[in-house]
Image (spheres, rainbow, N blue to C red):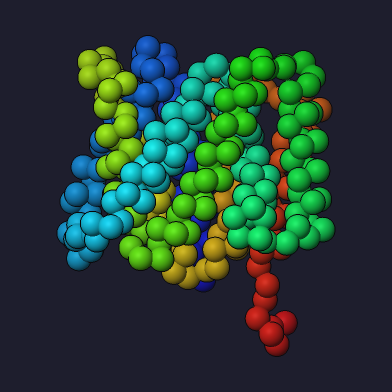
Length: 285
């Protein structure tokens, strides 16, 4: 059990470096499409070695390919690219906090798609996240309407990522899900990627694929074998904390007290949603 929590913490900490890599790669003149393309390409190469070692293989029902074509479009092509683009036009802290507006969209989509009830804690979380976003865009450092728009889109595609993942893992192993999602995502990225990158950017691109992508997802998937999804989601909210801390240490990014309050509301709202999803078994103390 404790090992499961450690795996989630490590995975979320690695995910917290995504914006950091985007900021460094932006310094090499790489577009978000190119960053994501090489992130996906290197991760696929790692998975091609890893899946046979796991005895998973690459076989999949042909009827599932349409689903992965849709999944790859929203979860790789749109989500990854929008997130990296938001980092380049705003800041790491701003982008990761708007990423965590995803529970708002999950609540709305859950109601529309699965007729899930809007309980009190969900409405409270909606209010917290909404107020948090308002505060984050106030104070000494405010961000453009463009950054807000793409940040909100990132949160929406992140929510779709989670919803589609629920459908995916019902039939395929998580590692195979990741492989085919990335594969289709790379197809969409091909027309937009620049194949000529500065040699100095290559180590960053490989590290981006290895740590927050390959190792991050593998650790998280193994953690889910030992702890509940909802508990893992709560621990995973360390991601924006790691991102904001690294952005401060490496790039000098800072948030005003008002914006830090907004950050706490956003993270708190996300945590509240996941916390209420967990229901202890009957008789548990």
